[in-house]
Length: 123
Image (cartoon, rainbow, N blue to C red; front, side, top):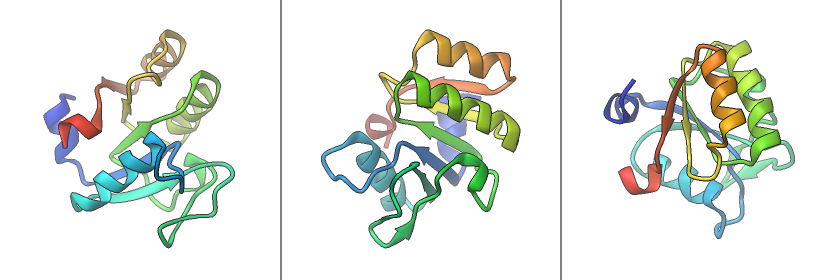
């Protein structure tokens, strides 16, 4: 899947979404919302972001997102890849810094389409 094809998909989850406005997880989540995407925030310790409920894992999501955007480090990234594979997610978008070789390899080995780019730049 290309960047443009992924951006045409309208149901996303952001792993690493946070209620802290200075963090990239918040910025990615809010720019998707502002561009009329259906976005599900995922964070193990947060409960809400701007009034929306936060899910503690990809497995807790009420839908299978078209794209899961990853804004976390390597260890939580590996966990998210495993959850995406179990949930049936077909495409993961890796923000700069989340795209470590181990995480990318895990996603590819799980049969997940991998995109490495910055949503903030693309939108």
